[in-house]
Amino acid sequence: MGYPHPSHPKETVVLSRYFGDADARTYDGWVQRGGYEGLRKALGMTREAIVEEVKASGLRGRGGAGFPTGLKWSFMPKEVVKPHYLVCNADESEPGTFKDREIMRWTPHGLIEGCAIAAHAIGAERCYIYIRGEFTEPWKVMTAAVEEAYARGALGANALGSGRRIDMVLHRGAGAYICGEETAMMNSLEGRRGNPRIKPPYPAVAGVFGVPTTVNNVETLAAVPPIITRGAAWYKSLCLGNPKSTGTKLISVCGHVQRPGNYEVTMGTPFRDILYDMAGGPKPGRTFKAIIPGGSSVPIMTREEAEAAVFDYEGIAEQGSLLGSAGCIVMDDTTDMVYQICRLARFYAHESCAQCTQCREGTAWTTRILERILAGRGKQEDFQLLLDLSENMTGKTICVLSDSCAAPVVSGIQKFRGEFEAYMTGAREPAMAAV
Amino acid sequence: MSRQANPTATHGDPHASHEPVFVGETRARLQALYPKYPTKQGCLLPALWMVQEARGWISEPAINEVAEVLELTPAYVKGVVTFYTMYHTHPVGRHFIQVCTTSPCNICGAEDVVRALLDATGCGELGATSPDGRFTVIEVECLGACGFATPILIDDDFIESVTPEKVAGLLERYA
Image (tube, rainbow over all chains, first blue to last red; front, side):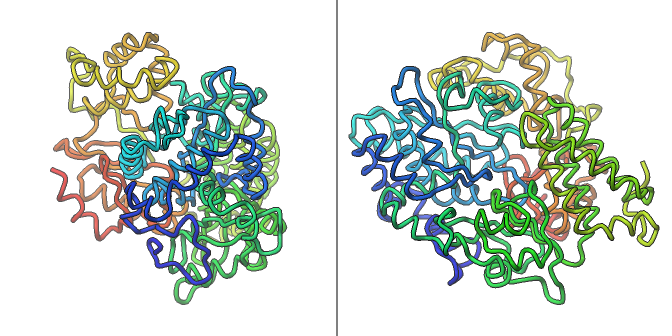
């Protein structure tokens, strides 16, 4: 299958195998496709055995940070003194990223199964799935699937007849990018403003409602059932040479390509293959100019850097950026880089929760300087001003939102300085009225 | 640029007496949530959604009611309401349109979609409600469907791949 395009021969379809297949959305359809076998197997395993299996698979967090999943689970207390909670992060809001949406729309039971296995592995009886408020269709699909899973006995007081209680609660966000940050998400679940929390305490010690919590991304959790069913060795073997990055990864490709969409590849696939073969390359008569490979929060790559990269955590880092959430924003030679970097800065200024001064002031100030440049009133000194600001916005705040604003600004100035200068010298007509 | 509906564009009376939301079936729905959260405060976001679903927006008296029902203070509830962009703190058109204009959609022509929507709805500017009270259009940040530029939300209908040419036809369904 594949959605919206049939799977490309260079893809390795594990999670996306049933995208576009409406039957896979039902409980029976999922079971016919081998679903809930992973949960059945996991419920017969000890917590430690599941954690070890996931550790051995090499699975790393797919939300952006790339932290080893099994290791994260192992931080949860061995003895369940207070209740433990699992939180599934379905607040997908990183510009360029639209993979979790497809997982929820097409394979909701795969996600429920992954959540249930993870809940069992961390000693939790309850999982909250935090779905962003704008995802109305995934919300409906997930609501129906959770109801069906309860009705069929996969969830509830006696999950699949194991005697183990596993409950699942869907929680709807209400429009806030920052709630995708795990501690902000926990505050939001508690009925608070979505301000990130200072760590420590880490979620595994005192998370949502003050008790041990693990937060995992949708794609991470959806990868768990096949790991349990087919084994860690199989998953680990999905790797093209770098044992630190294993398994498959959903790559969302958007922007100026012929076939935008999600492509699932083995870690280590050449970025070229994704951009040119799967996504169909640039539109006729165009060439690529810039690519943001991991959602808008990572440094911008030039076409040359992207073409030289292999797509895994280390491969993208070697070319100066980050894999992040693997949301690739592709920009061709028609793109005004200064305008788009300004648009990104505006995004972060709007989404700042305003707790930390560096972020609240820095994101807004950055946006205003970029707008001034676009209005034809920029000065050479603005380069240093933007870089100094970015320096003060990196590694200085409770969460990484302000770092994320700095990443495209700093890399944009490094790699596309000439476009800024064209506005400063008047070689290019202002794109914006002066404020 | 506007991501909040214009407060002057009211077509309801903010001072009208408040009919309680949490009675009958709605109260039962809220109470059914209590066992799912360790605290009543945990039910705040769902409760606010219920208010907006019933009334179209969240008024001051509604904030007071939510506070009372969940044993919180009105000031606290207001702080939460105003943090989240999807809760309306004043009345909006019968149909609320949110257009994604963040970078991935921006490079694919989202600003043209915004202009087409403002023209076709008669809203004129972002955040304003059309004179017939039918529509409010706002710009929003990333809707998470970047491969289907430009996505828009009309009420709860998520519509992908909108172009200026498609706008007029899309709006026909919303009376």
